[in-house]
Amino acid sequence: MPTVLVVDDERQIATIARDYLMRAGFAVVVATDGAGGLEIARQRQPDLVVLDLGLPRLDGLEVARAIRRDSDVPIIMLTARVDETDRLRGFEVGADDYITKPFSPRELVARVSSVLRRARHAPAGASRFDVADLAIDVAKVRVERRGTPIELTATEFQLLAALARYPGRVFTRAQLLDAVRGTEVDSFERAIDAHVKNVRRKLEPDPHRPRYLLTVYGIGYKFAES
Image (cartoon, rainbow, N blue to C red):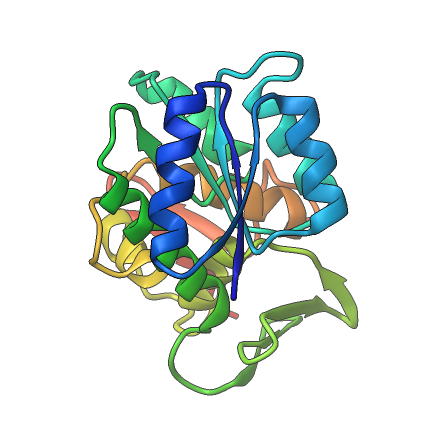
């Protein structure tokens, strides 16, 4: 049974999220502030974290950054903020999805299920392939550069794998969203930019002069042809 950590200082929202997730078959742990949520995340190592952006003691972005230093656990940001910049900031610190309050509890369950499926199931095709100086193991959700592991989140890995499988092919942001999220839920195309930025930071020797993930201006991205 997957364990979901819900971190939200609004107790009513946390209770509703807990009840619906439990009915859907998840084990649920609840924290009502950022510091407490971070402590539980480190102790319990949940399978997914639902994290409110505006938290007392330690805000959601700081909690997400701290979690990302230790773990690639999927994170769904939950917030009342609707500004696109706020959503991008969430993705830039490693969030896998984003839900705006007020939300449908059923939508939350659907998003949790979708993100967990994405984390557990690798892209279709060959289970392992080499491109440039990268070795990409889809079954193990693992990428190495000349034998050195590169730590990516599940979403970042699927984005890289989708591009690297077809060097030179140009993908629109919408196509990349389909590759990493599927079509079950509405998505946010500019989130792809944030995920690409994260992959470049981890993968590229010089993120400002990428040699793997290349921007095709006005369209999207491609993996460099060797």
